[in-house]
Image (cartoon, rainbow, N blue to C red; front, side):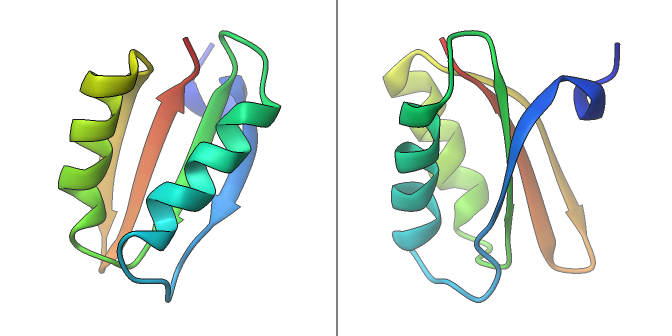
Amino acid sequence: MTIDEQTAMMLDTKGLNCPMPLLKAKQQLNKLDSGEVLLIEATDAGSVRDFQVFASQSGHLLLKQTDESGVYRHWIKKS
């Protein structure tokens, strides 16, 4: 099963600046069950580091990050 097939919810935070992508992601993660995957799309370059730090501090698993033409995608699996 691929990451995309595992994704339970997609969150579009394009156009929002720090810390909004992270805050909105936290709200969505609270709605997911343990083991479900949230895909966040952002245009804030700072979101790359923000989600790395968030995952290490929260215990959630950062599965993958990509950058396609300034759209940063982050896959987080809820612990």
